[in-house]
Length: 334
Image 1 (tube, rainbow, N blue to C red):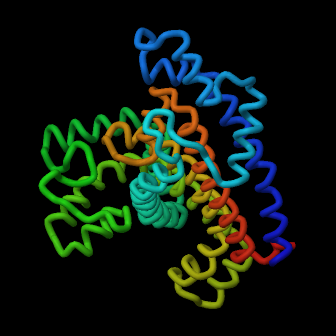
Image 2: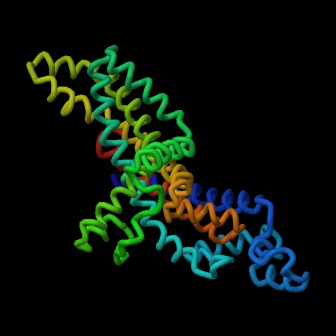
């Protein structure tokens, strides 16, 4: 198992270097100058503009900027925001709990509904339930997040008034942000109204962000279960007189979980990508909203550091998925 872990960790290093190179080059292809965007073209003399670009290191050749950036990353320094002059790492740490809270809730929502639906569809293959689930899964996987989010707001927030439109909690409540996870902070504040407000603000973003992963998990679970249910050991278990629930849950589902775990791990990237749109639509103060604002301000250090940190998280999750493979199926370790 240790050698299996070392092989997987060794693959992360070139991936990490490739991510830093791509994020650096793609961000510098975005038109516009961060200094001019911040101060305005008319508010700067050519001499002042040249001085500010020199202070920010933007007047150096691109390859020198990249080598300097790689050196800073290697020492753990991601730079400072051109606009706020705050450390990129400190801003990321402040906002990341909001994104994690939303992403975890969306994934739990997708797994809690998608996994049992996929199992039931496989067990009842060819039924109306099966065809209906597959139709809804295709629809959910094809639905644009920005359109789905706006429709949910129009129906449940504007027309019915059931849920808030934006934000994480109502202005009437103040919760001490000691952990950054608002649900946890509200729970320990002993204010039932704050907990209800935080939950009500979380419902729509969770559904919108979790719809595509839900559809993907349901389809993959159904496909994996159909393959496993046709194996000889499943027929043997049934011939021994084991109950249908035991055969499906204990014998079939565990072996079908390997491709499902793969999909769940890959959905982390989808969640973080979808969180950018979801947080923008619902004014959710997380990393996605932060990155969108940084694009508008041409804040290169924030864009580079934020992209790198998100990509690192995805790589770590994929490493965890690989290790889960080895736990679920020991043959993979060899």
